[in-house]
Amino acid sequence: MARIFDIVEYVDEGRQEIVHRIPERGSGDFRLGSQLIVRDGQAAIFYRDGKALDTFGAGRHTLTTANVPLLTDLIGKAFSGRTPFKAEVYFVTQRELTDMKWGTKSPITIQDPILGMARVTGYGTYAIQITEPQLFVNKIVGTQGLYRTRDIEGFFRSIIMTKLMDLIGEMGKSVIQMAAFAEELSAGVRAKAAEEFAARGVTLNSFYIESLSPTEESAKAIDARSAMGAIGDMNAYMQYQGAQAMRDAAQNESGGLAGAGVGLGAGMGMGAGMAQMFTSSMQQGQQQPAPTQPATTQAPASPQTAGEIQQMLDSLDNRLISGELSEKVYERLYAKWEKRLASLK
Image (cartoon, rainbow, N blue to C red; front, side, top):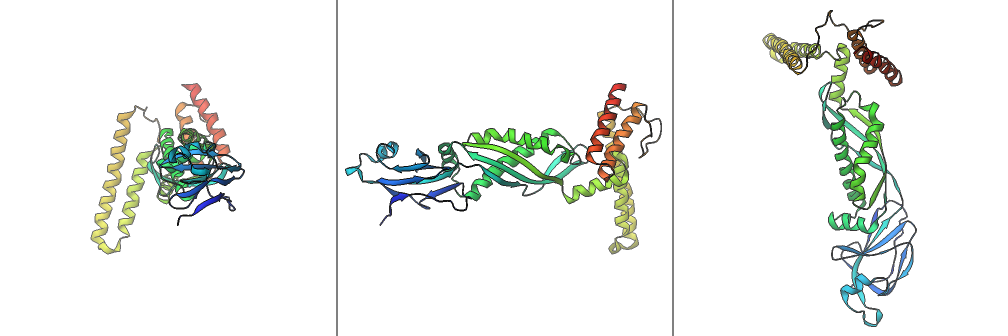
């Protein structure tokens, strides 16, 4: 025999559930004249046939044909005012949900203006508040079929990650520079995702990036460029990569001396070929004045020409990556010399 609910309420003692369904499965029988108790910070939505109908705010409500007209219209006139009707009730929290978690399940691959390609991972928190509970139930429960907290959180995370990946691509910054733009990224993701959340009756109150960093492979590429002192000199970087391949081939004991010789030749060819190909591509894309002197890893003590100032700016990038300069000092010096460079153009 179906259970008839005479008192309908939900107490979220752990304050963790976004939505709670009564009954947990199927439809319940709710008797007209029953008591519905909705606590502060909650809204109760009656749901039937795939649609959210009547909504109740905080307080004690006696279910009658007067306050559940949409439901009673579906079953016709209630006999003697006590006829049960079938529906589900969703208790939706309306308090602000802080410390919601987001994170990359797998690394994001981006086009990097310095490294070519790079992979990054990130995580952080966000806060939301359900401001239109009936719209929320229609869109999340009705359209998405979600009411368990972990499923709803997963859906929200997918929205956030999509917007984050779009914004990283639009900014066109290197993974080396990413940490310096964490605040701008946070604001941008919140602005981009706000409309998506609002369309589902939810306000995205805040979004924070706690970490956005390169994967181990990308970090090794950054370390290699730092060791070469070759930021801005991809030709030297490619030669360095070729030298690394030569060293690895020489250490390969399985191939003997012949294998080592082949490895050495392949490494030399790869480094020279890649460097030549990249240099040719750069020359076709932009015309640069030929350097009047060999490039060095050390900037002039007191740069005067545009070329010397540009070399100083490249040197600052290198010193930031190696840890020689703090971000604050880097930003101050970079702004100073960038302004000086602009005045010479």
